[in-house]
Length: 416
Image (cartoon, rainbow, N blue to C red; front, side, top):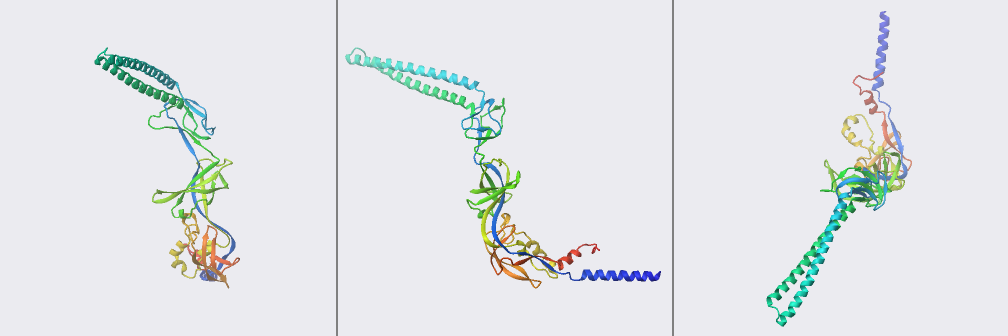
C-alpha cells in the first residue's frame, strides 16, 4: 500500500512540475494584420435633431367667443382663405347693427348742421347788405356773424362724430369678419386645440387654435453641433440621416443655414445647423428624431489605413504595467479624438499628423513613419509614407505578455 502512495506522489509531483513549466514558459507571439487599401474616405460630423416643416403657422383668433363650428381636423389640407372654424356671430351682428344706427344718426346730424350753416350764411350776407344801407345796427350784424361761425363749428363737430361712428362701424364689421377663422396659408393642419362649444378669449394674448404646416414636401432639421465641430460645417454641404421609423433607409439633405447664436446647456456650447430635406413621398413627419451625418470632407482614390494600426504598439515584458495609463488614453477610437480625431463628429479635421505603424518583417514588428490626413471611424487617409496598396500593417498582438497576464489574472490561480 505504501508503494502505491509513493507512485501517486511521484505522478502528482511530475504533473505539478509540468503545469508550472507550462505556464511559466514564454507563450508564442503572433500578430494580426490588415491590408492597406485604396478607395474613398468621407469624413463626417454627427449630430441629432428634429424634423419640422419649413414654415409652420400658428392660427389664433382676434376676437373672443364660443366656437360654433369647426370645418377641418387633423391632417386636413387647407387653402389660403379657407374657413376652418367659426365663432358664434350673434354678438358681433348686434354690434354691427348698433354701430350702423349710430353712423346713420351721426350722418343725419351732419346734414342738419350743414342746413343750419347755410341758413346762418344767408342771414349773415343779408345783414351785411342791410348794415351797409344803415337799416340794421352793428350789434345785429355781429350776432348774425357769430351765428354763422357757430354753425360752421357745429358742422365740424358733426363731421368728427360721423368719422368716429364710421370707425366703430368698421371695427364691428371687422370683428364680425374675424368670427370666421380662415387659413392664412396653403398647407396641412397638424394640430387642433379646440372643440365645438369651447370658449376662447383674446383679451390679453391670441390663443393658438390650429397649427398649419405650409408644405410638408419640403422639411428641415435643426441639429445641434458641438463648438468643436462647428468650424468644419459649411453651407451647401451634403448630409445624410436616418429616423427610427425607417431604420434601414438613409435620407439625404443639404446644409442651408448655420446660426451664429450659441446655445449653452450645462456649460456645453452648441450651434444650430439647419439641413433642408426633400419629403416628396411624405414619409417623414414633423417631430421625428433624425440622426444626421454632415459630410465635411471627401477624398477619392487615396490609401486607407485601419485606425487600429495607429493604436498598435508592440508589447514586451513589463510593458503592461509601465504603459497602463498611456494605454488607457491611447485606446480611444478614431472617431473620438484619436488619430486626427474630431471630437464628437469623428476624426479628420484636415490637419496632417506624423505617426507610425508597424509592419511584420521576419516575424517581428518594424516601425514605419506615416503622415495621416482625414479619417472616419473605419479608415484613415495616408498622406505620406513608404507604404503602398496591399502592404499589411499590424493591428493586434496575440500572445506574449498579454496571454500570460490573462492566464494568471484570476486570484484563484490557473484553471486546468
